[in-house]
Image 1 (cartoon, rainbow over the protein chains, first blue to last red):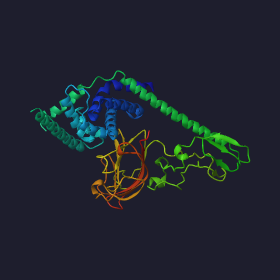
Image 2 (image 1 turned 90 degrees about the vertical axis):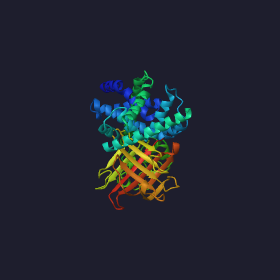
Image 3 (image 1 turned 180 degrees about the vertical axis):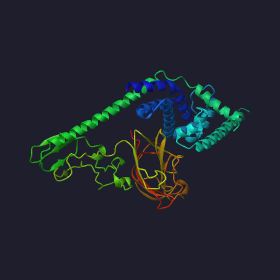
Image 4 (image 1 turned 135 degrees about the vertical axis):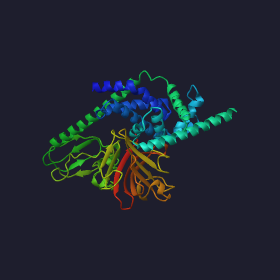
Length: 167
Length: 300
């Protein structure tokens, strides 16, 4: 038991920040991201007998965060919609850019969002992303491409609106 | 997409993450608290089960060899009376629902017939013997007086499936999933079909089961049988919708039916409890069948 606690703690020190970033990019909410990370480590603690090594633990933690983030949609979908109408008033260093990216990410369906974040923030390969999300590599490829295109359109639209507003 | 555009998106993500405040100093302490809470819950559950087993044994060994009629009265105290010396023992209090005389319909007790899609209900032998004046037969001539009383639906969740040979989703394998190994939940539209709900059963393996249900257009899901169900894209609006899929496995054409045994409303238009059995034929109306039952409760 102590060994398991110590190992999970070591994993926490190594992976907590990365998982928090992943959860934040998937959910757009800092407090929720922190919650999801804690829940993911509890899940790892419970399933420790099935996690074989450090790499497996990392993959397990990542996929748990993705699934928990997806699950949190159940209660958060309406809040996300509301945030579209009334942007998060949390202070940001560059509010315009922050809202653009978060709105654009929030507008993506979870699978596309997860593909984009895993591939282009965490740098996961197509195969690793496919394993984490339980989909085929081909689906990862198409979902990522579509997600990026949608992000780009959204960001361009936002930039156009910004110029229009200031011009 | 041009490389510079991609770089811009990646940079934006990195900048957003860099702007996150530092990890809370008590982050690990919070994880430890969750682990402690989980250990305590597990210990309490184990202690409860041990106590129930001890009580059952106590009842068994203190029963007289040929007791008279056994009367089980409602409430936490079961009094056994008869010509032989009277023995009083306590049993686990019936749940609120069992005490209210409702028939437990959770899949946890589902056996052959219910797993095969037959709704459980009155007369299926699962009714708790806790009603006023319920008389049990002599222990030597009928069911044991110590037979566990069905406590009614648990707060947990379960998915059970049977799959015929050639059926492409479960691929002929039986499935029996419960928490805490799996996470169970409901998803609204746009994940769910119009007017319906998506039941989502997942774990980080990753294993994803999704069960989409929707009534004919203009109706809302209610207890009862729905026949002639099709995939969301195939429904004209007059047919209910059923789609059972696992990860990327699904049917191109579905002929199905489902029966909602219990549904209770929850937050945001989603159920807080849904107990449903279903049959999904893939490809043709008499194609290999996937039968199952799923019970999800989001009640605290």
